[in-house]
Image (cartoon, rainbow, N blue to C red):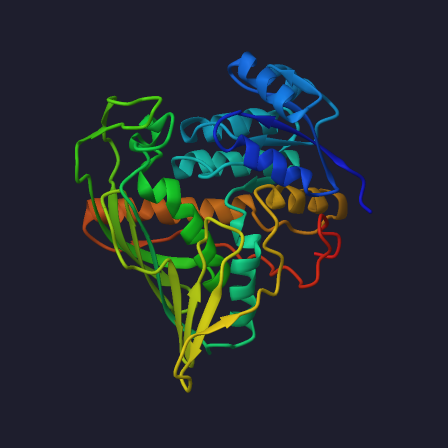
Length: 368
C-alpha cells in the first residue's frame, strides 16, 4: 500500500463535511489540519470532525508535514489561495472553478509547473460509478460513435436555501460557473475536448431576494448572466447543446443525453457519484437500465485520493488542472460568444482523463 499523504483543508463552509468524509474513505489520505479566515470556525470544524489541528491559513501553509492542501474557499479567491498554496511548496486540489479568468488559471498552472507540483480541481464526480459506467459503455461502443449530446441544468437559483447566496450572483457565480463545471467536465470525460462554442446569455432579473433562513429578505444585485444557452463543437465531431439556468421554475428536460450512430444514452446527474445509466439501441423498443460497472459509494475527495496516488507513483491524476482549465476556457468563451455575437474558438485542449478500471477495492485506487 502506498504511504499516506497528509492533507490540510482551507475553508470550512457548506461543502466541508462532504470533503472530510470523502477523503476519510481513502486509505492513502490523512486529514491532519484545517484552517479558515475565521479561526473560530476552523476550531469548531476540527472539534466536530475530530481533526487534530485547527490553525490559521499561514500556519497550515507553513506545516512541512502537509503535502496536499484542499482549497474550499469562495470562487472569487480560488486562484489567489491556490497560488499561495503552490508558493508554499504544496500540491493543491481546489473547488470549482479553477479560477474566474483564463489569466488566473494560466498563472496557477504555470507556477505549479515551475515548482514541480500538481494541481487538481473539482468536480471529481465524473469518477463516480454513474459517469464511469457511461464512459465504459461509450468506450465499448454501446451506442456507436457519438454524434451529439445535450446537457441541461435548470432551476431558480440558490437564494431560497443557501445560507450565503450573494456570491452566486457576482462575477464567478451564475449557473454556468457554479454548475457548468459538473456538466462540462462530464461531457469532456465522455466526448473529449471542445474546439468551438457559441451562445446566448442574459441577466433575466437584475435583483434577487433571498428567502433562506439566514439571509431572508436580503436583496442581491445580479452581475452575471443567469441563463446561458450554448452550442459546443467537440474535437471528435460531436455537437453539444447546453442550457444552464437560474431562471427556470420547472421543466421536463434530461440531465445529460448522448446520441450515437447506433443508439442513445441517458447519463445520470453529474453532481452525484451514482445514478442509473440508460441506453436504447437503434434496434430496441425500450430503454434499458445498465448495472453500474464502478462503485457509486465514493464521494468528494476521490479526486484528492487520485492525486495522492499520482504523487506516490508518478502516474497522471484525472481531475487535473489542465482539465479544469479547459472547462474554465469553455465557460469564459460561452459568455464571450454571447457578448460578441459569434463563434469563439477554444485555444486550450486537454486529453480525456483515463477511465477508471473496474473492480477497484473500496477505499483504494492502488491499481488505477
